[in-house]
Every structure is written in structure tokens, then in C-alpha cells.
Image 1 (cartoon, rainbow, N blue to C red):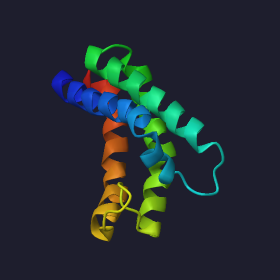
Image 2: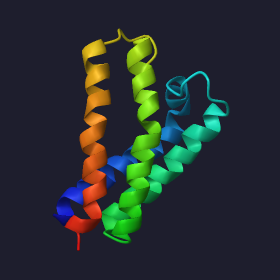
Image 3: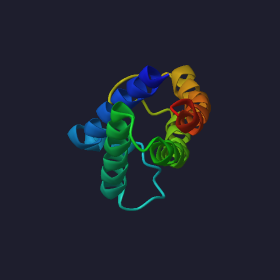
Image 4: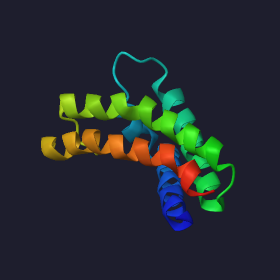
Length: 122
């Protein structure tokens, strides 16, 4: 299923690039108690780009899988924070709580998929 990890890779690459193009948007969803919001957004963007490239190239899959798994676990609080605060992704939009909580719940299958990716690509 190399094609599935490549699709995931393109998604991660796009998300990582967006961390730099729309940094303010991502900074808004970093929980308020965390300092250095811009640095958190940039570091997570770099990691997403790295993981995306590795998945697209189908290289170092065990490393990419572990890195992606940990990244998804570490950003999960931002999704929970967004849902609890009823924050839309874009400022000025009407919040959609059902979609925000669906995003929180969808994180779990993404984490499990990331964990299994290194085994699937052997």
C-alpha cells in the first residue's frame, strides 16, 4: 500500500507548508498556556514537511512512521483546545462544534495508521 502512504505524505507536506504560509492561523489554535507559539508552529511545520517527503519517497518508513505518530499525539491537544473553545480554523467563520469534535475523534485513526505504516511498506 505504498500509494496510501504517499497520499498521506502529500497531505503532510501540504499541511507543513501551510504552517509557514498561514502561521497566524495555526498559532491561534496552540493552547493558551503554551509559550513560544510561533516556534511551536514552525517546528511542527518542519516535522510535517520532513515526514511528508519521507512518505512520498517511501524512505526511512520506520522513522517516518514513529515521527508522524508522535507528531499527531503532540498536536492532538490543539484539536481538543479548538473543540473546547469552539474555534473555527479561520478567524471570523462560524464555529461548527460537530466538525471540531469529529476532528478530535479522527485523530485516533490517523495515529493508528501512522503506527502501522512502517509495517505496511516492508
